[in-house]
Length: 477
Image (cartoon, rainbow, N blue to C red; front, side, top):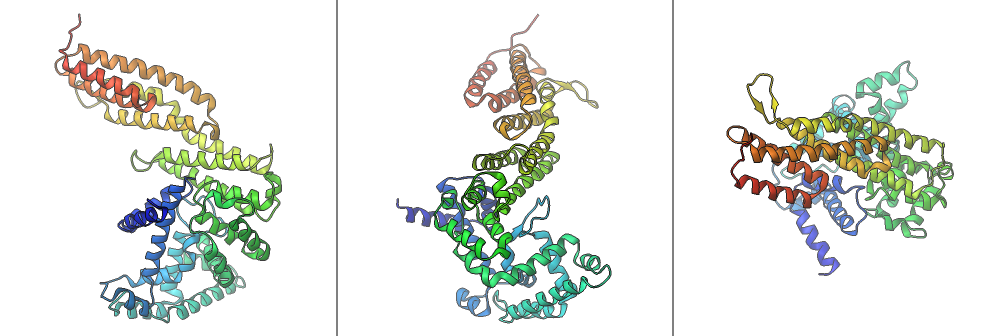
């Protein structure tokens, strides 16, 4: 099958998915793979999402010509909000947001700014547009939307400027909008709108999905980005932000910084106009730490901490492979601090793993119940802990837990072997009411051995357990 046919088939499949499914695919692939296949999937998914976004805010003429039929009731406020912030879509920062990064605009800030527009700043104009859309048979924004948007943002810019000359004016304005962070993001939006006519051609010239091979010296992307940096110094943060948004691999930003600066020395890059690209890579590392911290306190199954560790490791490794960080340099100290913080998040659960295995693979006495029982919660904790240990071992170069990992690894291996052997012995020798419980524990042990030792070894254990289950119990004593 030709490449074009493959791309068409892939796009047809992706087009059958819901917008939510496409968003999950983009989030999952963004910054996690260098492969051509993943880049193709990401490009197709982003293209479909862009087409859907364009269709969601058409003018009345295009809506009538493209659809040719009624599209049913729509949410006019959502359509208006999308139209007002259409330039911000690729600069949107989603949770977690560890700190304000210039050039990125928090989605929560856009919600707050929109609410302020509709409630206080331009209630009459927005209310009139809402009424006009509600009376439309198709999903169509009035032709006056651009004019109204210009008036709304001009009014917002005036409010921001006036606040600087009024005692506590900025604090009051931040309170009206919702927070100081939302006010800062409003200033970012106003700045983006100011430079957009000059910046838009550069945005349109970029690939929808930037892969590592695009970042080679002398390539079209490197020349285009370098020219934009040199001719538009005031756009530096926006150049970095759009590259961050479209990068498909953690390698992209540091590699671009190296190619543009003409050196892989961290101190030279830090002193150049391209330092912001590395700082965006640091920002993404901080996002992964924040996401891991949230995942570690949530119930198992709500969020996957292992994927956050792998994402952190992939990003840390990309930085260290592409850039030479001098010992004791500010950037090197920042990386060391990140290693310590992610290690602190993992330390307690890794230290407790051997004890959790003991509880999971033995019958225990419940406080309010008679007899011995299988502790299902401990078994789930043990499996999650083992998965965490295995991914931490693979990411050991990026975290500061080498001694603990070595010590825990030995104790876990020993405990798992002994407890598995004990569970199988109990299946062999128990009968009556206790046998079903020990069979459950033995199955838990097989699952844990698969995580730790791999599927081949666990398959051997599974066959042994099946053979035991077919034999009558051998009574002891």
